[in-house]
Amino acid sequence: MADIRKISIEEFHGELRAQGVSGKQHLAFRCPMCATIQSAASLIKAGAGENFEQVEKFLGFSCVGRFTGAGSPRKAPDGQPCNWTLGGFLRLHKLEVIDADGKAYARFEIATADEASALEAANG
Image (cartoon, rainbow, N blue to C red):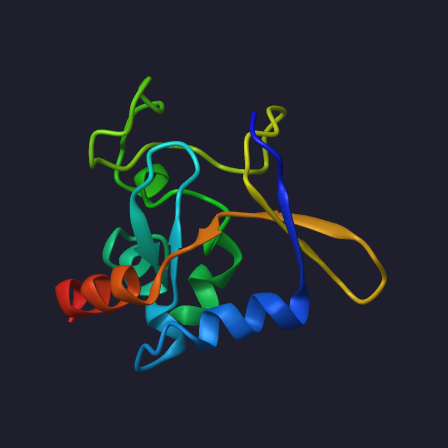
């Protein structure tokens, strides 16, 4: 596995703000296994919850495919979501966010502004 990128919580929030989306439900992340771009709006659409508060715990942590019946990650990303979560035994993530106490939390990669904007447009 490649090196894990480590950023502070402040940097994490700054990179999310830089996406320029219209609201927190459109903040976008990339699954480290299938590379699909997803947001809280994606999770809501997939049935993971009815609003941001209900899906926030999954955002940037569990692939949207966990809620659509998707299978395991494939050897190479194919544009389809998978059933990956960062809560398992395998530590195959690329980003850790460090809190004020120095504790590291695994997260999906932050999507680019272009990726976030495209996803927002697709999710409406």
